[in-house]
Length: 276
Image (cartoon, rainbow, N blue to C red):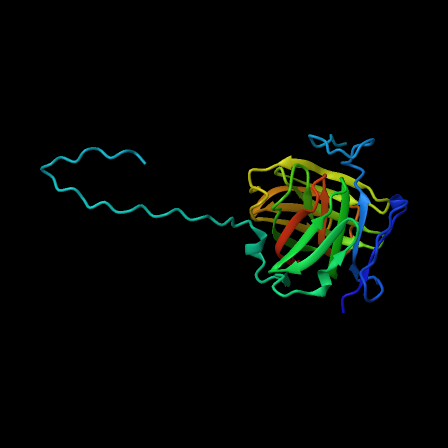
């Protein structure tokens, strides 16, 4: 049985997160929690910045002579997409876990003052309600350490630096990594700390592999020990090493609005392959 707990930090001051109704929070499924993103938020005003802050960062045919019969032209074949042989989803066989959200389930249903999560019409629908630079996260399932994790998702109403991320290796104290994808076509890699800080590991950067935000993007991370490789639509876009969180943890998503009210992410599928 999946179980839920939620971290509430001192940085929330006068605000409070409400736990999902039902069973009391426990330690397997991390519920949702929210915290100010210290890396990306302006220090004196919640107005989103206009740019990401710096980091520690066919030949035409010739005429055929009339005395020579010409060949009957044939239609050129339609080009087909070429699959990247380095795409991890093509290398590891059948996934160990697939969540396609085809059936409404209470495991992902949650709402508080900052976000809401529900499964409907074959999607996990994630809403950040609009508090600028406020992270909301939700992870579930067994704890895994070395894996390839990916999701297919779209952001139909986003703007600017609104972002969704794959969260993984989440442990007690709400320490976790996440690979983020922004509305304006950049991706980056962060770690979230027990002191409610979002620390940049790889600065957000543009990639021609990213499709428009209202289209489906497949984002993935290959985690093996302290080495992390990042994929967008099957193409490798970057890699890095980091030793901060070496152990296993749960997986899910983190959502952050840069000011868009009810910024929505629609997740079609989440899956992973556990590495030997």
